[in-house]
Length: 208
Image: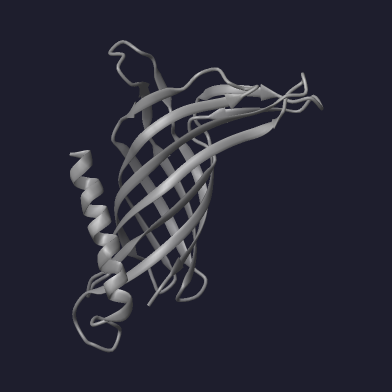
């Protein structure tokens, strides 16, 4: 199922490139479908603690299953109605780099590649609400250098997304969202679950 969804997402992104050069469906073409490729950047907070790091200056930080930076690209499909659909692929990660208390450099990262299929309903010309499903592919925790504690892969549950989006202009939108998802250690049937649920703030740019 996950492979099928990922393949569909890649096909959708290919269609987006074609839509850029051949925008058959637009506001002036009457009833139909309008394709709008988009890119987005978000900051997210939440989730269970995976690890923590204390640096030479005494500062410490925590890597969580719901953090921290999410970049994505996809296609927004707007029908001749208040309803629209959206599919996207992204890279969601939190990386900690720095010098430890012992003066050595190291890195720790938790990252994954989410695929999302969402639906939205227009409230008016500027606001819309929506939600859908999310599959986080290839989730893993990795480390190196002085912060090396090993590498671990995770399986993810099917996640749920709810969000509200405000269009500042036709092309630029701000978004608040909440995601519910969980991760388990890959290959361990009795491994504990890690809650990757989070809230996020995004800015998106829509083409066409």
